[in-house]
Image (cartoon, rainbow, N blue to C red; front, side, top):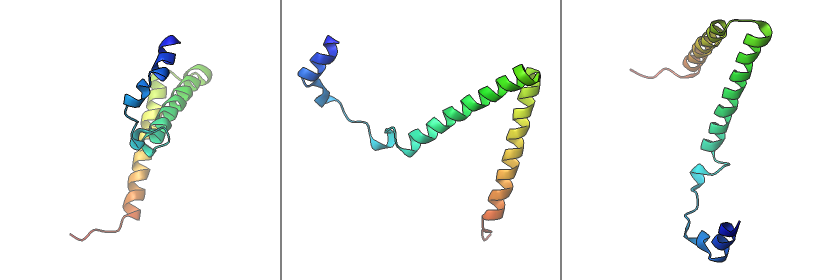
Length: 89
């Protein structure tokens, strides 16, 4: 507590560089990072549900997520090809 009070009283905070807006809490980069962390927690929750409540073995849960990853990549690839105009060759 005393270190913090001295930090304020001695105005040491003036020598600290502010965080750039790119790394600010409300920036696109940090919002995306937060969304990825939330996604990983949701995946962990789903894995726990599948293994503990449904009774799927751990390897089965991994297989479900692997197949979901493959199918979502397939769908995203098809959608991106359908939406992208043909490039001249």
